[in-house]
Image 1 (cartoon, each protein chain N blue to C red):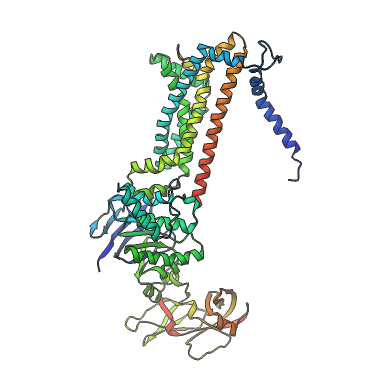
Image 2: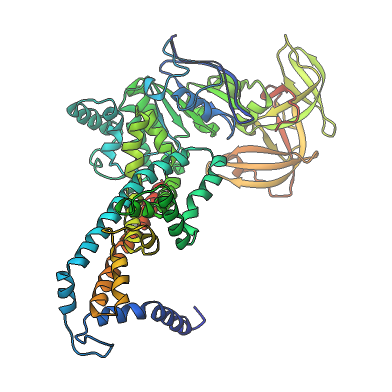
Length: 366
Length: 266
């Protein structure tokens, strides 16, 4: 598969802070690629480096087999959708979208056609003469997309594209983004700090922290096989338990904990983990019960219900373990109605060994 | 409000009276038919008519307007450029430049006038239009820079980034994005500068030469030979023109902050 954008050992410092620290990525053409990480993880800096708005201190940027490391933005086949859209407030919707073509000195008739076509694609016909301040948030978002896509970029960069929208609009725009990508056949590189957004939209995700890429993979790979506890926590609100490996046999480890009883967890039989580890269990895998033992579950810990959150189709129980750690359990609404628990009630949490993940303990982060 | 606003209204009215009563009297007297004193002898336009016939006053008016236009225009060109250059610099370099730039606005005007005169005499510059224009630029330039920078700070840097990303060169960014967005501030600065220049007496008094007498200088020289109703009429016109310019300037700057407030809540 041919590469659309390649970053080769990029370093960028802002003052004393290494915003991007030896990042290498190769992004395939036509891919929806997300950079996922908390704020300050360097993901927006990477976007600006690809756009040419900043230049790296070290390393190379290659777009379509051409080294563009020090090229200015207008020499790159790349356009960007800015975080708060950065629509020009003194220009109409039409003029905003036409800006890029206008800068390239395209003929007036070509501009007219291309802009009309693009506004139709983002469903904004009839709003050509409005000013950005007269549009809703969702409409401004569409103008920003149209303004970038009308230049037929090979790569479209999106900086937190949905962050400024409300929940319902956000879901709508997610579908819209996927549809647009199919129609314009460009590579989309998206920066986000919302893991559900990244999981839903992306073909592949790079999880970032502190200017470094922690893991690159498909949403499924990252969700199922996070390489570290940081990635795991970032991708799916996992419950954690730190302990030490007591034994490993036939792909099942026993992990001892200082306070709690030992737990069993599956691991690779070829390369068994050793020493201090973190065991993680996803909230949707945790079963809450008032029974001490249930057939089929390998692990059990006693806990007390700390908080109950109802969210339409499921109930989230926050329970406090004996070591004061808070775990979450997501229970489908039907199940929760059959047996509900009150705050303060002692319960038992159960899960299967195969549903836990064992990862080397990460020192002092999270 | 629980506390009665009557005291508030009364004090406000008193302050307004204190500030504007002399001006109201002045404008009123300019329509007074009496040649001497303040006794009302009936309504007349004759002082305005007489003013329009006075060759010396017309000349002074033309001088004033030309000087105000040229000094404001030059101050705008230099001031907008300086403001943009300063805003793109790092903050650490700005603080002392800020101080130096604003200094002419707070130095007593009479010192400025004397200092300018000394410089001109030392350099053997012939006093006239040129020196008055330079003198007015000394306060017009900082004024422009202060107003334009206030607006520049409200511009989102992402607009320039977006323009660059869409293929704009730095010249394109200046002409298509920065200057259009600065337009209200530029007009505001121009009107304010024009007014200040039109009304300036002290600096002009020191650096004007023969043939460059401005309206305020003319009024002053007329007063020396006694207060006439013509002066009232002339002053009334100057007051009205100044107020209109300053009002318009304020309105434009007010609107420009509104526009940027709206767009920053996108």
